Length: 105
Image 1 (tube, rainbow, N blue to C red):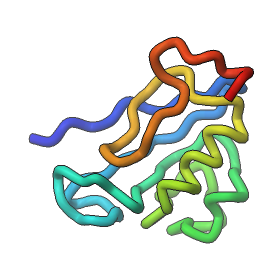
Image 2: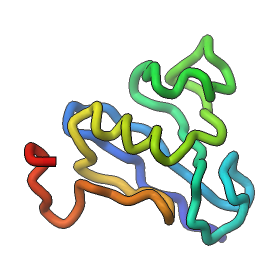
Image 3: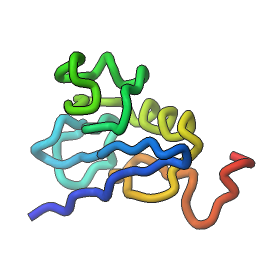
């Protein structure tokens, strides 16, 4: 059984699921990565940077976003003040870990 990543939560309260595994909409489609594209799901609010990847654009907080580039995930995290909790798939660097000063990044 594969481990699901914990939901990413950002400083401003925005959150989203970021997953990558053999059965997800990611690249490569395996269980190890490193991943260049990932599956994002069920964000807490509409996020314009995700909309072109939406499975159901009419339900932006109740849908999955397929093959989202890792750079887009990092831009979203930065836009929302940095990641304060959660997990990212292998290959997506978390710039906000290990007590980094969010204001200086």
